[in-house]
Structure formats: structure tokens, C-alpha cells
Length: 546
Image 1 (cartoon, rainbow, N blue to C red):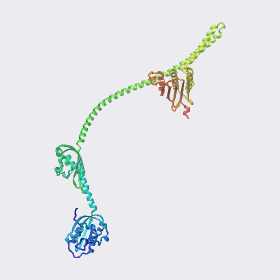
Image 2: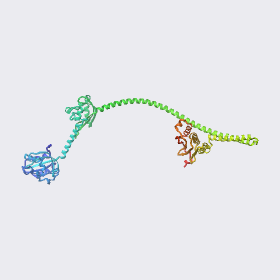
Image 3: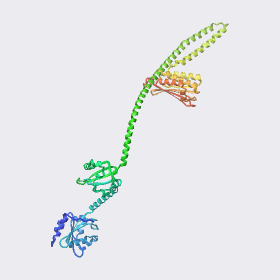
Image 4: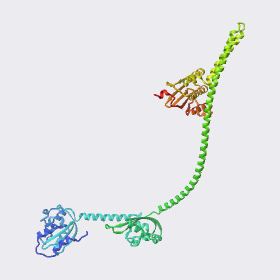
């Protein structure tokens, strides 16, 4: 246990004891002791042969605060009433000091009982005139606890630093001389503590760095900024080199004065080697990338040229396709015009001629006598032939261009075509039409009618169906026309492979109207043709005006 010598007020309190006096003025002592920052107790020895008879005469307010007891509780009591205190060196020391007339510092005494607060007390005794003894004390429990905690913390930190193997941790004084050395430093740098303590830390640097003043620059930077970090080659005791990461921290006291530097060094040779290899690989990769970029630039330029050529070719092809479609549209238009013209000529000219022939033959038949039976029979036969010719001419004219389409419109033409198809093929054909009046231009009406004709022709030739259902309806701004049969169906890809001109013709008619035609066939489950074409806003004026 450490001992301390009191100074200040405590020392001043001992001086009266050095001057013998025959009497003591107790009231004067009370006034003096009341203002002292130390705990003061006045003892009187009643039996010089027994230290247990020391009796408490006076205790100042500071003493009562430190002990946690009241003056009334302590005054008048002897040491015999404090059995735990008798086991300490305090009674014997008081008796010796009284005999020798010399003050004594008893140091720290741990104590506590039912009257005195538990704690550590720093105690000094000093003799007073006669059989009186003065006791000065402090409660240093918290101070000693803080000191011990600090010592424990410092010891733990010292053990931690010493046990670190991966880092060299050591201290240097302001001049750069090594003053501490941990086991990690010994392992990393190869020096034992006895070999390096007191030497300048520049011994760890290569000669070229020492010549350039690098060690001192690192210390100056740490002193100026508080910390300095550096990476570079360092030298071991055996002369081998390693790549180190070094952090130097300036150590200053509470007043800001520089006390030295803490250095933490780590061996990063492996990482440095990997970084160098990575840097080389990166350089090589960048070179290859640059070369590859040049090649890609050339290829890109060639691709741009090729794309431009393809674009021009596609533009030319698109223009040619547009021209072909325009030509196809013109041909369709001319064809319809020729069909209309021919149908009109057949109906008007040939029909009138046949009618005139029939009238002439009828007149000849009536003029013939009863004896001219052969002539009358010939006339009747010729009339029958003319009637058949008239029927044929009407059918041909209707096939070329049904007058119903021009005179009554699309809906009537579709119904007429369905009836003609059913009467000719014996296949039931039904058409569902919109309830509202549908006014279409000649181009759309003709396209829908011809697509319907072609669909019915395909059904008659290939479907082996017994029923055909057609539906025409308007949805929003488009017209939908659908033809469905219950025939044997077909494979669309196979039909495309056969290059069916009928299907191609229907699709071209739809495209010319910016529409879409889709044919879906399932073998054994029939075929469905769906046509969608956009409509102008004036198609249904009655409906749009609502």
C-alpha cells in the first residue's frame, strides 16, 4: 500500500504540535478546525498504558461529512468502542506519535463499520500538547478507484498492444527514437526490444528514403496534421524488404505539448503484389480493349455502310412495294370498271339482242301454217335456246358485277350472294347484318363483296361444309366482317406453301384499305375468315350525330 505525505492545510495543522505548550485553548482549535477542507479529529489519551483509551474530544464538520456520522454520535467515544479500528495499525501509530512527539503519515486505511461510512481513508496523525492527538484524514475511495481503473485500463491496453501479432505497434519520442516495442513489431521487423529501443526509427527505411529525408517528413506531417499515413518499402533486420502501410499519430498532453508519436505498421506485401499484378493486367486489358475498340470501330463503320445500303434497298423495296400495291389497286379498279362495263354491255346489248331474236322467233312461229310443223318446232326450240341464253347472260353479268351492289348497296348484295350460293351449292348460308343503315364507299363495298365471293368459292371447292355463317358489324371506328364454316378446316402454313392466289388476293384487298385479314383453320373444326378495316368518320352519319 502506498503512503502519501500531506501538505497545505494539513501541514499547517501539524506545526502547533511541534511547539510545546502547557495548555490548549479548545475553543480556538474548534474555530480553526471548522474551516479546514480535511477531516480533523481531536483525541485525548486517558490511560498512557492503553491505546484503546483514546477518546474523541472534537470532530470538525468536514470529518462528519466524510465519515457519514454526526458529531454527537462520535464525541466522547473511545477507540475501544470501534473494535474493527483496533485491528488496524491506527491505535498503535497514535500511541507512538504521542510518545515520539512526531507526526506520522499512515497512508490509506480501508475502514467502515455501523457508524463510519465504508471507504478508503488517507490518514495522518500529529501529537498535540499533553495527551492530546490530532488526526487528519480524507476519504479517497473514488480517487483510489479511479486510479486503479486507470492502471487497469493502461495494463489492459499494454497487454493488448503486446499481444497484437499482425501489426507492429511502437512509440517514438519527438526526436524519432524508439521508446516502446510490441511483439508484432518484433515479428514483423525482426528486432528484439533490447536491440531497437533508443535507436532512431529511420533504421526501418531504405537508404534512398533516408537520404531524401522521408522519415522526418512523415513525423513533421503527423505533428502538423495530427496523423500521417504512408505506404512504401521498409527494411527488416536481415535486410529484406516488405511493402508496409504505416500510420503515424502525434501524441500530445493536455496542454498540447508534443510527447511523441505512435506508429502502427502493417505488412501489405501480398496485397501490393496483387495490386501490381492487377495494374499490369489492367494495362494489358486496356491495350487489348483499345485494339479491340479500333477493330470494332472499323467493323462498326462497315456495319453502318451496310446498314445504310440495306436501308436504301429497303426504301427502294418499300417504294417498289407501294408502287406495286398502287398498281394492284389500279388494276383492281380497272378490273372492276371493266367488269361493270362488260356486265352492262352483256345486260344491255346482248340482252336486248336476245330479246329481239326471241320476239322474231315467236313471230315466225305464229306465221307458220299448220302444215309447217317442222318450222314451228324449230322456232319453239330456238325460243327455248334464246331463253337459256338470256338466263346465262344474266348470270354472267351478275358474276361480273351484280347490279344489286351498285343499286341497293353492300348489305343487299351480301344477302343476294348468300342466296345465290345456297341455291347453287345446297349449302346453307346465313348473313347477319347491322341494324343501323351502313353507308360505305364503292371501294370498301366492292372489297368486302369480292372477299365474300372468294370465301364462298373456297368453301364450295375445299371445305365440304354444310353451313356457312357470315357476320358484318361495326365496332368503334372499324368494320368487322367474318365468314365461318363447319367444314374440314385446313392448315394455314400448308396453304401458304401452296401459294393460294385466292388467299393472297383477299389479303391484298384488305391491305389496300389499310385493313387486316386473318384466316384461322383447324383441321376437322372448320375455318374462320376475319376482316378488319378502318372506317372514315362519315361512314355512319346517323349514328355519329347522336
